[in-house]
Image (cartoon, rainbow, N blue to C red):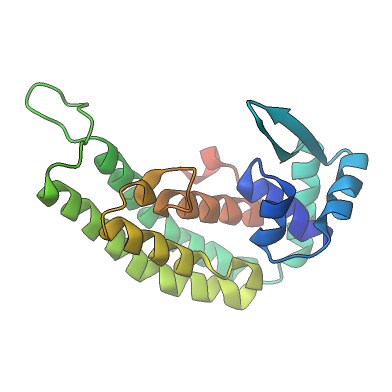
Length: 200
């Protein structure tokens, strides 16, 4: 269970025990987290009224070692990752367009979501990504079952955004399209032992 607990902490970045347990539907993660802390792989901290776990550098190294041992078909994951990267560019642009709507006098004007045509265009781009994500998630899950759920979560977030809940496109405090996508990207990078600068 250690590899899933460490991986959950890595994907979430900073999270409490309950969130870590929910990520892979694990039971009894507290003892595993304390074991990881004793080994120098994870640390528990509190600030600004919140508290949670994060990985140390040694923990990231151990996480990557365990993921490498788990992966039996690296070529299949690399093929999917090659298809993921163009979609990643689309997602980044869609989130930028969701946050900004340039005007003749201000190219960095904030999007106040009063232009339905602009927002509909962004949501259309996200729907294209959503359509492609199903195949990506299915192929990844065939190799590593822990990849399951990304497509469902993205679709759920997009449905809420389409229904008018603007936070579900790009906010980090809900399971938004951007948050789900960022997590999938991190999962792929960790699995292939890449860093974000390597993936540009």
